[in-house]
Length: 145
Picture (cartoon, rainbow, N blue to C red):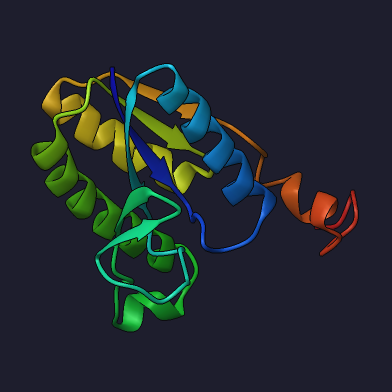
């Protein structure tokens, strides 16, 4: 089984998201499955377009530039376009059996587009809902608008 993971960010950044991802990858590899890994422009650690961290090779998506990056919604759309382009390149190179998109939705939409075009099934793992995540991180309270 060849699985291409589409991630918001990954190690070497330290977060629960990155550590959970690493654990999933380790367990899949222990089963003999091949894993491949792509991060969106939201992976903020500096590094090359392809980077090996802890024995795992990550394909990084460059952050878009321009006026669209200044505004909400247009920023997310630009990031998804960049992710879609990079994901199509990686799918062509690694020929996965399945694409596993890890939340947020900014990974799922590019994965669904590329998966549909390539005839590859897509799994979307929701880890948190956008409306709940800020409250759980303490950046707002439940009921805030």
